[in-house]
Image (cartoon, rainbow, N blue to C red; front, side, top):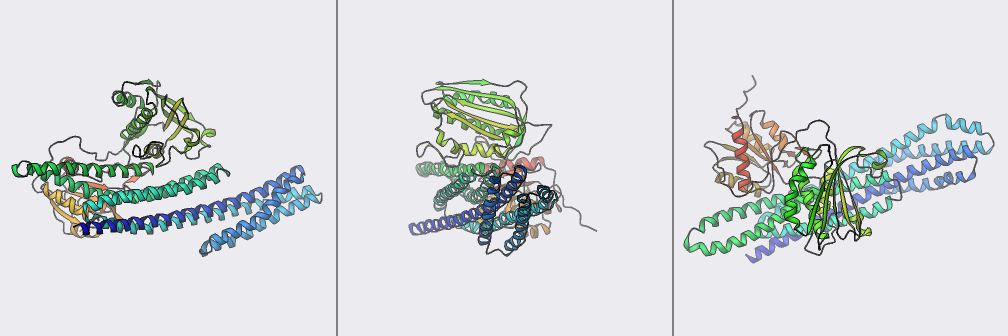
Length: 623
């Protein structure tokens, strides 16, 4: 048994190493894309500099303006050669450069001709060259070719990242061979992921420092592409983790139920009690891992939100008693709630978690006591403000401010506090994902967050959420059951169509469905499920994973409902993709049970859907 366990751990270690290698390959591709885009942007800037030098010389006659033209004229061939070298293995990009080079040469020739005319004293003729419009046409063509060039690099990156997803899925199946080894593997993968993400962020941060010397718009583009790459990496890992944790937590929960029955037998009571403590500890560890994947999804903006109309004043007032209990009597709490506060549209539960996270950070910054102030107000972000950031829109916002009188944050690390895994707390006291989660949630909600701090004087965090105009209705995914309650069971004759591509998760789900009294038809993919449905058996509900190999649960549900129009559908996933989520929000008709889930979670949600649904009928065959 020891040898088998050791072997599984070795397999898990190899899997982590392979995953790390894949992530480094993705890093290199991201770095290459940024490098190509940076070179292309610099090329465009040099052409524009040449135009500016031409205009300045023609208008003023000052030879100093010609230095810009001469500098650009010397730099452009070097930049074109660099693009040639960077895309040497890409015939399509080389073809674009073949079209781009004569356009650039023609533009510089037009500029040179106007300058030569001006030097000869014929300024009217020089201006006529500019007014002719040929230069503008050439510049438009240059911009179009460079835009197509950059887009092709971005598409190539997306294709390569898609290919690496297959390896991650295969590696996740290896780790399901044993509960203990899988738990250890989850920890090792989490550590490897942390290192990989930290390395990726460190390299992209270096690119950002360089890009700050260039245009702010270029810096914003790089930041958005970085978060997309990190989000894809984190989302794929979270999906694999949650499949593993579903198996781990579910089977540990099943063992607890079995031990509870043994505890009633006198000979096994002592053993059951000891094993129950060990199972509780294992469950806590697995649930902590589940929280880690939740945080990864939060900071990478991949969590499924439950947006609804929110009154921030009411939300803050409802949390005051919890704040007082959590922060203790040595910290006073003050509120300044704005009158006529605009409503906003956001996930109330996640926003409560954000406020609680900020309050706990404030408590840690005030070890000797202090004052926590929570303010709300209406505000307008104008064009001048939003241009500084590039990832928000000008308009009306409801703002939520949390201020403490604590130790404050040093100026040299203030720009890093929203970065994932960055923390100033001692080892073991913080994951470094708290403020990263806050930032991810706010950005996914269409908002904006800023932090202001001064050492020894305290910290203020401002959260801007867009004003809600009109009414919006959001979907509500299935939550977790609160507290211990009787597990609802199946009614006679109820049949579940179970579709799950992970063998371990499918076996676990089938076992608990049978234990609850349901009949089960199970399938590993869309094709198997459709073959089963073609026989038109009695089906009460479809329970399907969202991610099913090359297809997805949404496609399957649409096809099954062509035969069973009123069939209730319950989706489950460890990483919600665009099949059921758009712009960070669940589609209105979706019922979702997040992984990992327990028997009680599944039983409660099934009963809720089945009791509220009409009896599914088979659609009549086409005549």
